[in-house]
Image (cartoon, rainbow, N blue to C red; front, side, top):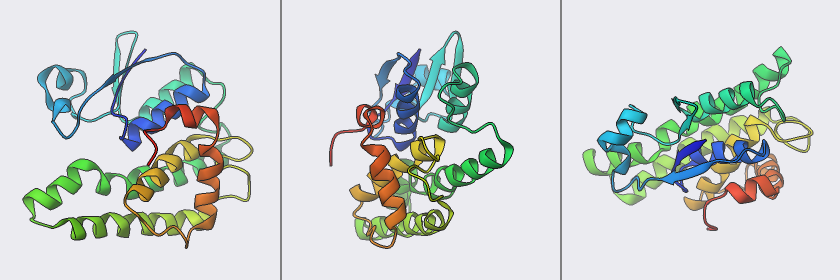
Length: 204
């Protein structure tokens, strides 16, 4: 199993967490995103989106972190990352997608680079854009998160795997997390677990 990866990518971080929680062995191949290595022809043949992560296993080439997590749950079901119960599943996906669809896509590297290079925005404006969308999404999560030890309940699941990388990036961009005590407490609790520590990028 090969994970095509970049250490600072929050989407890749999600998949590393899940691989670790499931105890799966894998090889990492890292790409320098700012240098554009993910747009090289050999990588585009593997993942036409030109993004990380991508998972390569048994002839399968799969992109998109949540699709990878869903695949891993199907072939290695314990511990489950996506609940089997329909209501619990829907709630978990609601929170995971708040991060993966409402926060991350409009704050990832290619969007921030477009704001800077194509639209001529300075660092202050780009950072302000980033913080606005993180704060908007975290305000939603602060309400949605359950009264349990982890976002996933008694054990971490796909929500925690999405939340911890997003908190890491929020701290990189110096987002004020004071208004989100439940979000930060749950992320810090999960982030201290060995599977999360082993998956983490370099300390801030």
